[in-house]
Amino acid sequence: MVKDYSKNIQRTVDHHDLIKSETPNLTGTYLFFSLDIVNSTFFKNKINTWAEVFSTFFKFCKHEVQNELFPHAEVWKMVGDEILFYMPVSNESDIYQAPHKVYDLMDRSIEVIRRHEEAKGILSVKATMWIAYAEDVDDTDNQIEYGNIILKERVVDNITLDFLGPDIDIGFRVSKFASQKKLAVDAKLACLLTKLETGLSENSISESMRIVSYEQLKGVWDNRHYPIVWYQPKWDSVNSMFWYDQKFNSNIIKRIVDTKLGSLEPVSNLTKIFKDLNKLKQIEKLRDGVKELEKKNIALLKEKSIPIDRLSELHLVAICVNEKDEILISKRTKKEVLSLTWEFGCAQLHLRQTFKEAMIEGYKEDFNVALEFIEKDPSPIGQYIIKKEKEKNRVVPGLIFVAKINSTQVDDQKFDTTKHSDIRWVTADSAKDIPSADCVPKFHQRIIDTYKYLEKHKTDPK
Image 1 (cartoon, one colour):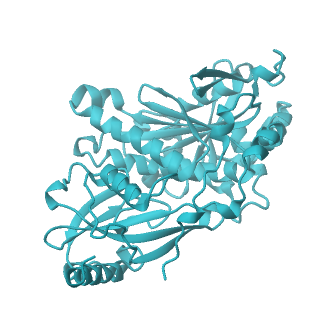
Image 2 (cartoon, helix red, strand yellow):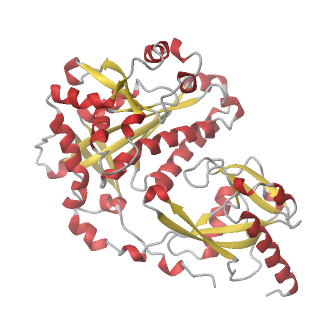
Image 3 (tube, one colour):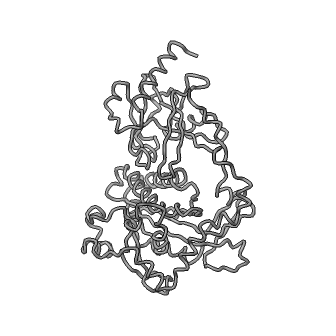
């Protein structure tokens, strides 16, 4: 018996709803991060189809941030070829996991834009992360204690936020020292990360960060030299870290390459630097502000909260079969879960949708196909679960159905390349040539079950 998970689908209210409420106090600690296309001006002047490449990049970043990596994050602004996000922080582990997630997003976004042949060898992406304690000006009587403010503007039933202040400016100053396929981390955030290591992870994040330079940033620290920090999963080889000619365009990279990483300082030195500047209290305030947003709005959150055991995310798979009884399969892009494996696509159930409606909408968006179902009320042929270990082993259930599509609708140029890197048709025999290690769990069994389902409904149509 396939369990019906649909009864568990409820609406949950989070920080998005809080921001839209009438009287929120949004004071607290916020993470900011940006992704910026490198060599964009040169590319736009050379390639006529640049708009398509850039659109793919922005679409991918927004989807991955808000649907996969940071559900509480919002697009802050888009400036030129750069997209910026902000996220209210309510848990220290969110801060600790953020560099890895942003670096992974940057890495995968590079793969996405380089699927366009003309972008290979030209375009790349750089990223920057920083942190700030910001005060809601509507609740401060114009007495700004920590220097950074939040401005709110209501448009109909939506509120947009903007952030101003010296710690906000630091992020933009630091971003100038980011480099392609490198994540620059604000020194204040890097220092806080070193203090969050105990008890949060067995893997030391300090091993993934280095002070790569000291630079004078306009308007920062009274023109004293500011530590420039990069996050990189591995620091074992300069050859794998840089293109061959990057050292000719960056003094930082030239010094790193020439010294074979020997010029780099550990981020543990940041504690002394902030102590020398009498700024350690700023790091403590960032940590104190982590849960401040929720504390200041406890009444609003309580009023709308839903017990966790009533909440569920439900995925819906439609195994698509054409008029030749061939099955459409797709290869996942590089992701944290089941990366680069062959699957059948997936839709997600949203509020007030039937299973059919959700799958029809999801597969139209991802593959530009129109699903039809053999049964008026289709029955699932199987179920599965996905365990997301990096999200405290959160389990996501899924149901599997069979749908019919017309093969003429499938276009290699029109599927969503932010989610799938390849598509193809297979039969029961040709699917056997795909190794199980390259597929999602029970991939080959699902194909067998699909043909059994089709055979049953040929002889016993409903």
